Amino acid sequence: MIKGIGIDIIELSRIEDILNRQKKFVDRVLTPNERLKFEGLSDVRKVEFLAGRFAAKEAYSKANGTGIGEELSFLDIEIENDRSGKPFFVKPEKHAHLSISHSRDYAVAHVIIEEI
Image (cartoon, rainbow, N blue to C red; front, side, top):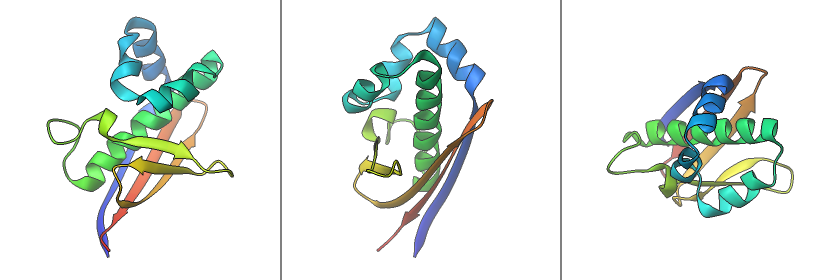
């Protein structure tokens, strides 16, 4: 049974601007494991990665019905990729499906949380 569905879209230019002005933004959005991966990327890829993770975490919070705030922070949500590159949630441990996509100008994420 589906518990919730969430979607989020973000302009890459918005993330790039924030990244250039507020270096601590990365620490607010990415977990330590995600930051390790982020640091190894090129500048262009860093913007795409951060935008994708931001959108995915926002979409998760919407599907969860809480939004990002007191009950759930960006750091409560961690995303990894399997061997084929498919993103998945490491935490929180819920039955959730995730898709992240990028275009030249946008990153979008879609999340479905199942109740088992």
